[in-house]
Length: 362
Image: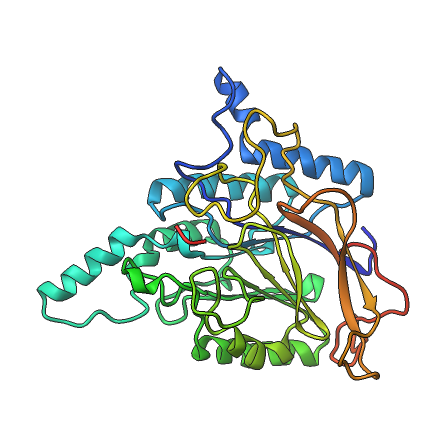
């Protein structure tokens, strides 16, 4: 890996549970193990390393790790993440994860509401019990990483990677989600956005690369539907000046957009939800019978570099672009990102004259 790039693997919407695509094919246990998401992903990553020298230094998982947020599902999530980190030789702190709407346990949330009703109390948003199975898995995975936290007071996470001069803002867009029909939409909230903006500012001054990850779709704007982040405009206004890149999932397809002229927004698809399953999204995924050995789990790398000015952009500003080169849609994204140097660009992110290689509702 070139010294001036960071290889980042972006996964989303793994949805371990009843409609998880992998692990059911094959007659024997050994065959079923080879059909697991980890085994297929491992094949893809090994191929990328052999062909292009691309080996992830950071893994970002943008939510919907489970299907219904049960402890049994999160046991599978934990096993997968432990295997992935171990195989890549990554410390746990180099795996950044955020919850998605499928990681909310509706039954625990409803039980909390019923308990409040029985005790003549008002439920207090954001209804912490809904995250208890996610938090249990999170706490076990990061047991040796005391700086990584997800708490009742702050149910979101800042991942600091000084050896890479990289910081990842792990946003929680499930703040409003509950078992109630009217609560199925993405929401971050100004308190969380302001919290991250304040903490990212010193990293901006020091010239670190700053990546925000959120589950719900930011690119469509503040439209009143559950495919979306309702306070997307607030995210752009409050957090936009403090980040270099935004990653999200939820829509089950791979797209490139822009939060600001210089801040790309990249989504990735799901390689692990059965075709036609609830919340399957718009991106078709190969079925058990027709998927290739590598399962399409990792797409070709993205290249980051300066792009021509777009219409309406100030002539003195340059924007970064991420180019998807290769065949087929991205189900999960592997990309190289420019590694930051001391105050190398106008906002601390390295800008070079030539492109740097690399990089739903239930």
